Amino acid sequence: MTGRLVGVWRYPVKSLLGEALLASEVDPAGLTGDRALALLDGVTGRVASAKQPRHWRSLLTMRAAGAAPGPVRITLPDGGEVSSAHADVDAALSAVVGRPVTLVDVVPPGATLLRAHPDAVLAAGVAAEVPADESRLGAVVPGTFFDFAPVHLVTTATLDRIAAALPTDAGTVDRYRPNLVLDTPADAFAENGWVGRELRIGRELVLVVLAPRPRCAVPTLAHGTLPRETDALRVPARLNRVEPLPGLGPQPCVGAYARVVRAGRVELGDAVTLD
Image 1 (cartoon, helix red, strand yellow):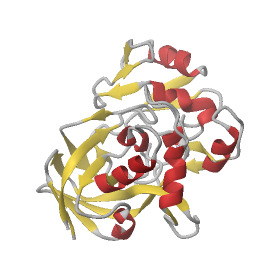
Image 2 (cartoon, rainbow, N blue to C red):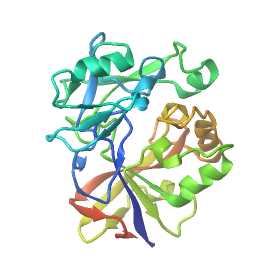
Image 3 (cartoon, rainbow, N blue to C red):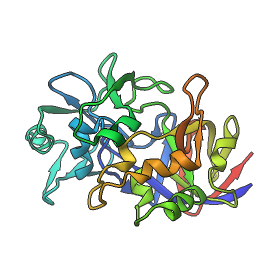
Image 4 (tube, rainbow, N blue to C red):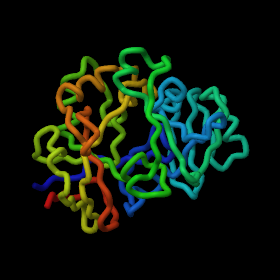
């Protein structure tokens, strides 16, 4: 199977909106600058994540651009900007989320986040206190802010199939937050069958696909100007509920997780080959 790379996305601050790129270096820690920063909750010490919507859905009202260690620009809900290097950045971000937070670029030892049960969020609403699981970060690449693996990829066929089943213009790329969007002749949700296989993108990059990417409540939340859309979880649950890893049970999945076998630079339009 061959195709081409049609989307490259980076999310410099965990759980904030990200930026579309024309090209990026990709190494074992993912795209340069991706999830290089995160907010630490001053109350619990956990990493802030929109996977717990009750406290952190406002993270998705902000957008980050740029690559650490250089300054990252954060656009606030009112359109103002603050730099990650500015002395008042923590105060500005704390005012948006309504809790004391600190912007950090180093993963604290034993860092965790809370992932609310998606079905409970759908049933009770984003402001409700619902059951949540605590999980450690950096399962595949320790010392990073990734929940599991450093690269999330998805095909246009999968995004198009979901979008066609949604009642409104869902902004699927924004909602599902992939790093790499692939245009291939594969059918929707073909990524499920790529586990254990290698993807070559451009002249250098080689990825190995690890697992289908399970979805939490995040796609259902308002993303910037995109309104809340509960079907952004219900549709994948109906169309592609599979077991991403042994023991996890069936979950709604969109795209796949991958790790880097050989680092390299990717650009829009690069050839994609599935071995």
